[in-house]
Length: 312
Image (tube, rainbow, N blue to C red):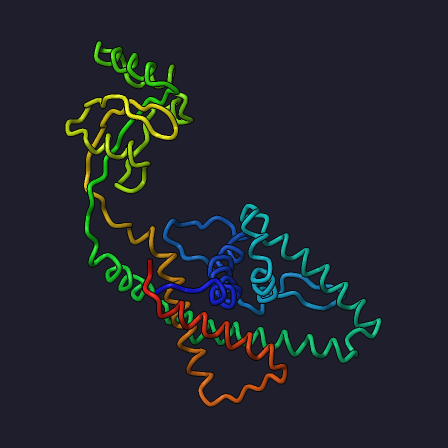
């Protein structure tokens, strides 16, 4: 299934939050834990109510650390695990101090602040509902079933591994071909003569399949039949190539580990859409601004069309 950028943007924050929560919370719980005495000992469970600090008597709990981790997931990914819990605690201490100052200044008594609280309450309830109703249903078994379905119709194609020497002129390419025919080492010539950025590794291009290289190069490379065979000079828009066939193989489907993150997100998106559609049944929505209503309807239609389109 193909998802539109609008749909991805609309659900990305809640999905990212759940991924961050599941990925970071165990780390936070274990950051300060001493080494386990036995290799098979399970880490001690951490209670969400456990107090990790107080600020003028106001507690900061393990649950507070988890909430902060959700909001600061990107920042946490950039730092070593051992620094995450102290970082979050410092953020929460600052937050407690500044929140008290704001409350003392009467900022919590304004209508705008109450509107912000209502918004934050709705956002938190949405996250909680997503976690309990949608995310819990995306099990490893569900992801593996999606993987099996994804690779069931996989058709292997021929892949080849080739090396090349790229030079600016045909005369240089012909001279290199003569040297190779005389027994010169291909990799050493590539390092010495090739103007390709990959010359340092002997001109090795790795494995590729049809459609991945420019047409003249691909035709010449796939025209080589024997391992170690060297082509005649061939011209492309990059210059003149001399190509050597290194290996042939049949392509294999991506492994479960390679596809699992993508499949998990697809399952989350699909379940999210299905759940929202079910919840929207019978809900009365009124948008007084006609232009805004039309724009919302257009986006909804775009998302629906993208959702019905086959995956590329």
